[in-house]
Length: 98
Image 1 (cartoon, rainbow, N blue to C red):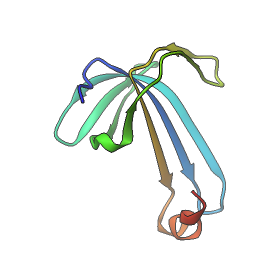
Image 2 (spheres, rainbow, N blue to C red):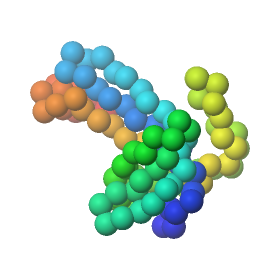
Image 3 (cartoon, rainbow, N blue to C red):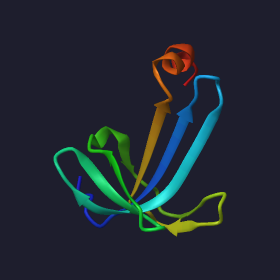
Image 4 (cartoon, rainbow, N blue to C red):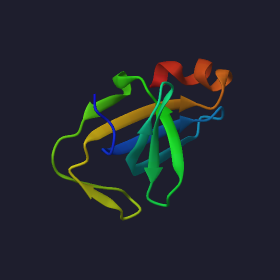
C-alpha cells in the first residue's frame, strides 16, 4: 500500500486493567514511512508512530467522517483500528471480550 501523504482515520481503543475503556480517534496525514513505522502528523502537529503492518489498515469508504470533538474529514484514504491493552493483566482479563 502507498501511504505517503495519505490521510488516515485512526481509531484506538485502550482497555485498562480495571475494565475501563478509553478511545482516541483522530485524523492524521502520513508524514513518512520507515522500516518500523508509519509516522503520522496529527492536527495539532504532533507526530505519532503507527505500526507498519498493512493488516491494520483498510481503504476508507468515501464520505464525511466526523468525530465527537467536532473535527471531520471528507474521504480519508485509510481507516486504522487498534485494540490496546494497558498491560498483560488487562489482556488476560479482557482478551475474550473484544
